Length: 77
Image (tube, rainbow, N blue to C red; front, side, top):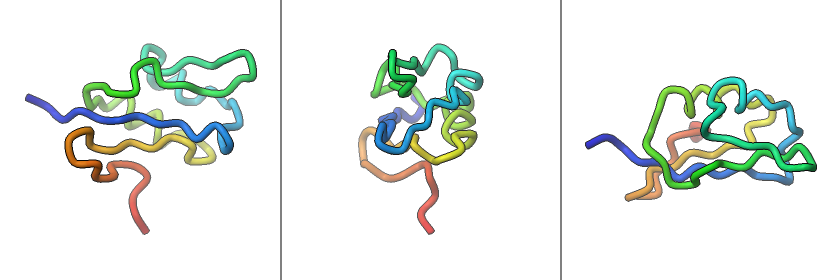
């Protein structure tokens, strides 16, 4: 069984670039204010979701392991 992630978008940081939709269109949606939202905040870990988080120009997307809370992205400095 693969990892499961909690996907969170900090809407106070999100600028609505839609890069997340470009990389993982089934995992993110933009609301009427062009703020990103995860379709399912608890989801299977996928390369597409990781690429979406990595491509966000303002690092508004956080991925953590669902079972432990360990940060997957962004990397801790």
